[in-house]
Amino acid sequence: MQVNIPLKKVIDNSYDITIDSMPKMHFHKKVAIVTNPKVAGLHLGYLLSKISAKELYIITVPDGEEYKNQDSIDTIMESLFNHRFNRSSLLIAFGGGVIGDMTGFAASIYQRGIDFIQIPTTLLSQVDASVGGKTGMNNKYGKNLIGAFHQPQAVYIDPNFLETLPQREFGAGVAEIIKMAVTFNKEFFEFLEKADLEDKAQLQEAIKQAVETKASVVAQDEKERGLRAALNYGHTFGHVIENQTQYKRYLHGEAVAIGMVMANRLAVALNLMSEEEAQRVEKLLQKYNLPTSYEIDDVEEFYETFYLDKKSSDASITFIIPEHIGGVKISDEVDKSVIIDVLKTFKAS
Figure 1: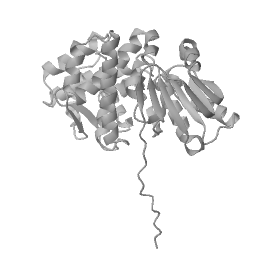
Figure 2 (figure 1 turned 180 degrees about the vertical axis):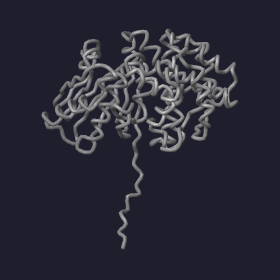
Figure 3 (figure 1 turned 30 degrees about the horizontal axis):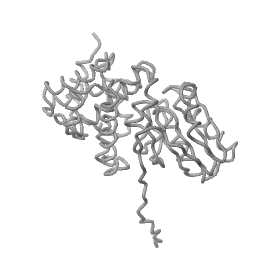
Figure 4 (figure 1 turned 45 degrees about the vertical axis):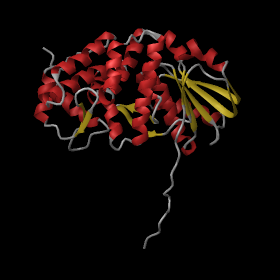
């Protein structure tokens, strides 16, 4: 005996990404802005001059990747319960990728899902983390292993926030821009080779192209069943590096930059990318003072940590491998011996 539940509906999760100064907004509902002390100290006054609501609350969680955990989620959830938020209430993620991921995750699970808005304040979160609906938190096993796909209601990318961004944070964001160009857009990569992203106009154009690239991929594969996984170029290696350094030595974009160099070396070994192309990518990363080297203490341990990656399975590891510049291949059939040989080139002496 079977009973069919007819749920074949088309749900429109579309939303707009505004790249400009923040507009004035009023909400006839309860709103909570989730942020951290650093962002609040620099920019909360500006945001509050742009936003009003029926009831407006500020929720502050500690700053840093190491606080992207259950304790911080509990802090957010307890505030929502204490202020009697309901399903029509709204969260606003005001900060970098850590704040965006946690706020989105809290929104996805509070009363089985409420709306949230992304207002990213770092370059990395503006071009990557705020777009696409990936939310989550870390645990002792790895990065973003607990989470949900929950699309924001809107994204507001205000370039004014970048004026106070430290140089390392800026470079971390550039790494994510380069990532998208290498895998999906050769002309964009060539633009970046010539561009000076310290120039506001050129930076805004780079943000626009990066966001358009990611939006196009997400529209084709919202839940990362295939093509969207290619946006994780550099991340398979980078997440291991972050795990081994306990998220304290490198910013996320810095770890991804090293991961891109490792992925490129694998691509060269598989004859998918020329040595000259790999050098071009490395040179562009170094242009923005991004790290491109890493010393592996235990190659076998590094390899085994790949299996904690969300894209991997019990029997295979999924690698995102560039095909020249502007193309990409997703493969779970790379021979272990090839991977080990690549890892050995990063072995600590």
